[in-house]
Length: 136
Image (cartoon, rainbow, N blue to C red; front, top):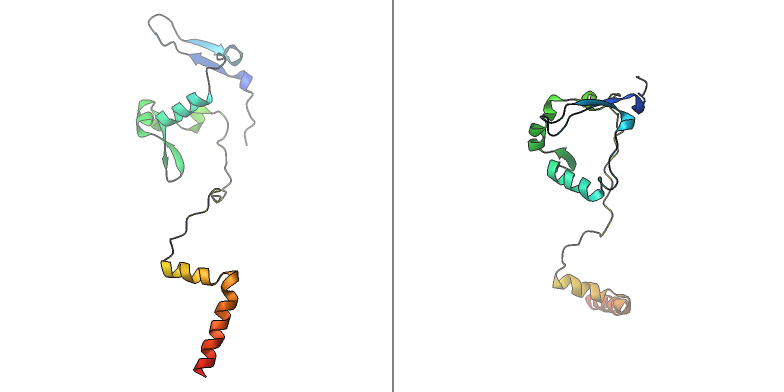
């Protein structure tokens, strides 16, 4: 396994947006930073909505973004210098929240359920014994 590379050793090639006015420059990692509040949760959500879509419970990059940024031609080592991570499989967890609704019961089932409540049990038991005596 390769040793992890220190991020401060990286050098980056910064390409200008207006190439006719400026030229590309190579800078150290310590020279790069972003302004405060430039990256936010809302911007991240917008980025994900624009470039990703869910497929069978997995978030995947949209085909338009893959074509636009030539991502199909790149691999993991192009973006990250270390070995690719190995993810341990974990089974899908059960959803927490409201339990699923049961199918509606028919009117007969509701009447039978009402008859079997605590107050009516003795009445039902008495009727059963009465019918058994009549049969004999």
